[in-house]
Length: 151
Image 1: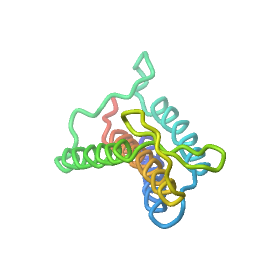
Image 2: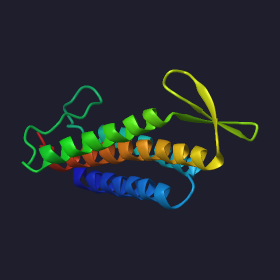
Image 3: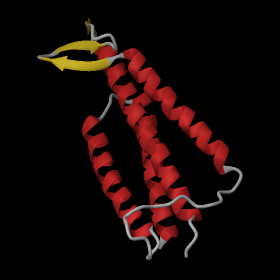
Image 4: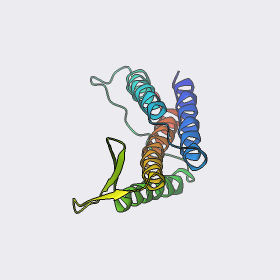
């Protein structure tokens, strides 16, 4: 059962990677991202509930005692990838759409008017950050389920 859940988690990771790549080709699709996040979150809760050991009193998923050697560098690279995407998002600012006018809110709180193309770039950066996070989450959940020992 855990291996099947791990494979489904890897499929969600592939979808997250697809959404990440899609932001470079087309304008952002925010509704698609929300649908993806909803189903991914629901699956994550289900996988943690079904992937736990039967004797665990609480709903939790413990990490395997030993991952293969190649997993640690993958975790470091994935963590850096997610952090870099969030830094780029915060550095660029938060996109705001008010009455057909486009603004960017910076970390200092300043609000600047921007063009439509700049707004779409900031929206794409926002979606890339969330897709990167879910990619990292799904790969981590899949690897944890795949290598988890049964007791």
